Structures are given as C-alpha cells and as structure tokens.
Image (cartoon, helix red, strand yellow):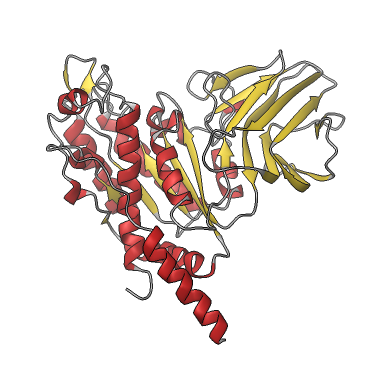
Length: 402
C-alpha cells in the first residue's frame, strides 16, 4: 500500500513539472482572460464526470479518454485540432494515447498517416453527393466498383508522436456474402471481425505495425464505400478524433444517415462542436442555424445522454471580403442559446480573438488568410492552444494535492 502511495505521489509531482497550460504569443487585441469555459444549463455536472476521468487517468495511467472534435473546414486540415491533440498527448509522460479516427482524404493526407490508393478509387463527401451510402461521421469517403483494389496506410515518421498500431477498424458499406476485405501481404497474424450492425471490419494484430495494406475483393460491379479508419494501440492517454469537411453546416451532420450508428460505435467521452461559419455566412442562415445546431446536440444526446459537449464560437469573418459578416453577433447568441437549451459549455473564440472588427487585425498579424474566413497555420495553432489551455485550466482545478 505504501509503495502504491509513493508511486502516486511521484506521478503527481511529475505532473506539476509537465502538465500545464502552454505558452502562447500575446497580441494586444487578443484577450486571454476570456480563454475560459462557460457552463450552461446542467453542463457542469457532465464536465465534472469528464474531469474525474482525467484525474483517474493521470493518477493511475490506466485508461484512455476518447474525444471527438466535430466541425467544418477549420478542422479539415487538422491544424487547430492537431495542435490540441499534440498538447494532450504530450502533457504527461506515458499518456500518449492512440491516433483514433483518420479520414479517407485523397488529396490532403493526414499528418500522422500516409494513405495511398490503387488506381480505381474515387472520393466524395456529404456536401456534394446525395447518395445515402456516403453519409457518415467522417463526412467524406472513397468508393470503388472494380473487382480488386487496395489501400496502403503508413505511419508518418515525421510526426513527433509515433502512432504504431496493433488494431484498426475500417468503416464501410455492407459486404455482400462473397465479397471480402482483408489484409494483403503480411506476415503478422491477425483476427478479422465483420460487425455488420455497426458497419465496420475490425482487425486485431498479433504485433504493433507501422504500415498495412488492405485489399477489397468483389464479385459484382456495385459501389463499395469506405467512410473512414480508426487506429488503436491501447496506450493510455487522450485519443483526439476529428471530423471536419470544407463547407459543412450542422444540417449536413443531421442529414448524415450513418452518423448516429458510427458515432455510437466509437464510445466517446467528450465532444467538441466547432460550427457556425458556414451556417450563417449567407443571409437567412441565422434563421435555421439554432434549430439545426440544437438538433445536432439532441441527436448526440440520443446516443450519449450524459456526455459533456463543448461548443466553440467561430472567429470573425467577412462576407465575400466586402464587409464584416453582419450575422456574426447573432451567430454567437445562437450558440450560447443552444448551449443553454442543450446543457453544453461554450468557449468563445470570437471574443477571445477580439470580437467585432478583429478579422483585419488578425490578418495584419498573420493569423488570418486573405479570404478573411480561414486562419493561417499560425492562427490555427494559436486557436488549438487556446482550446487546450481552457480545458486544462478546468482539469487542473479537479486534480488532487492542489
């Protein structure tokens, strides 16, 4: 018992040295005092349960915390979310976690894996395609109708965190009786399980690998869809998953017919929603945004009744670079209203970054691109650090020995 207590005390003293808010560059128009979580409705209770999980993970180092960050083009390149992930997966030794969800993007590859496709795959997303076969949590997909095609997945060794894996899931459309999804050319023993109900095939490997090739073998000429991948290595820590599609609105997720089953199958502990930029960009969008965002929250609650949900507000945008989007103030009010109705918390990036008339200031400081909608890489890294700092501030309050 005494040895166990000494171990815990060593871990907590180490935590003081490692886990803390990250330093961010200061700008005179950015108000870091507002980088705090605001709780609405009964959200504090759900977040306290999340912080208890963090306390347990940090103290004993024996669990994963599975986070989903859901959004639009601000997340597609995984710059903002990637920074938050990096901070969570390096905040304490031995808690690196797993990579989790990886999308099928063919043109812009994720930073942690390189994915290459054989010649007869096509890509699509849930904005441009109305086929129900392509509407899922990832918001994107690839498909083929030829008899034999393959996908190679390799860990990107340039990433500071090594995401070797010993199990992974491929989420896909239904496999007809004589069709097959298998690992190609491997000396690693593995167990394969097709979960028809939840729409994925899971591969459990006998060892950790840094690359894998999967093969689809089909008899017919119907389309076979792959929606996304989920990689696991069993390491304790935060698994920070991201789903973001350029142009996405809350309504797109509400209309994604596979969204709910895929969401439930991944057993999330915490969900962050970063929407609003596209929802209210054009006139009239503000009239439907509240209903759609609240519907999204309610749909999530059907799968996870007590899950903590954090809504982030978008930074200021300009309408077609002509003037400040006049619907920004209404967008922020809507997000706060949905948080109250849906018992969510809010991180107000809009006001942290300076609120009204801040976009031009961000642009002149290399934080926003010329379109006055999207942030630069530097801007997204800062936003990712601000999300992490706001959350860590709350987690830190709930740690023992303070």
